[in-house]
Length: 520
Image (cartoon, rainbow, N blue to C red; front, side, top):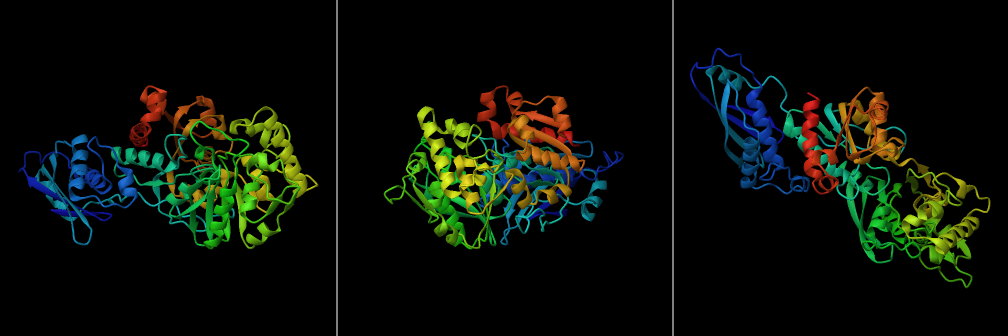
């Protein structure tokens, strides 16, 4: 009998000798270990009766009951029956939880006496652990991460969200499940990413930052629950969680009414929690108010001709007569602001916030023209020179980028900012291959979006790059030039767009299994 440690799991292998019936066959020392590793991983993380990983149970820290652990381990062994000339009839005897929380798994197998000596001595290779924690963020929002655990991994799983279906965290979990299901010995590091839009806070929380719930005003003024991420004196807030288009009633757009007050309230919440450095993701906005609502929440005075506070949204901004930003600046004194966004549009004109993005938010015809005029008036009142309005990124989030720059915020490319703080470069340095992914792999992916940026950095290090997407719209030459070695298309795997949308997690797990074999 041998006891092999796997994280907090003890795998006890009980071997029944069969005499010398197969003693002449060369012994493979890793066979029983492979079966034990897979069953132990299943019992620790939990899989359902069809063999699918239950990520929420493990991720939220809810302990599995002994019955659930037994079911998970048996499901694994049933799904992956193990037979060889040297080792037969691998079965699960029992799974128990010890008083200290340790899990003991007992596997029985029939083999020849020569193997018993090896089992007594123990394996001659490291036993794979639970998937390692994601890379820790750097110590600042500066260009170089200062902290990383330095653990070498076989595969870095660094996907973005599959918009409308799965978060980046869910994508990473499904891929990791598939990789481990096919090859339990793989060391896999999970690093969900984002580029400043929805999913940014989730990516930081997955990397070990502390989530903090706050109640703020939604895009139409109704209270919504948002989250921010904190670590020390740093914090991350996400406009999509406070003033995002996904918070509007289904199928409705309110281009004239929607505002950004909730973002300002979230910024204040981060400030009150002790943040001195704040990264603001501004993708996914529902409004074209120039960030006026955010400024009002921070204390700025935005008044009409009668000296009254203007109303919300682009419609309220049209009444603006004078502005006083000093109260907002005082409220943010000592707080370093960075705006993470890949939008480089200016505030005004044919490439501005209203003209380019207004129609997506419900602004058309006279309302669109009125919004552009209101933004122009707003820009003149804050900066008569026009320099701020012309800056790249001023048109982001319906002009919120302009308002944040007026408060002294630095505009940084979204993917680059997020990857820097998540210490992605250090994680890549410690990996042999990387898996990227998003809902659609196309030319935009390669133009500064998160997955494309990860691929670019991985290519520079000579790493194997595998990509998965709901749909792949790039030809082989383009993929090769981008450094992407192989792709998986969920629409092709599932047979239809509907399957890719409704069975995304299952198909990602399947893709992960195929990736593991491709890396063998």
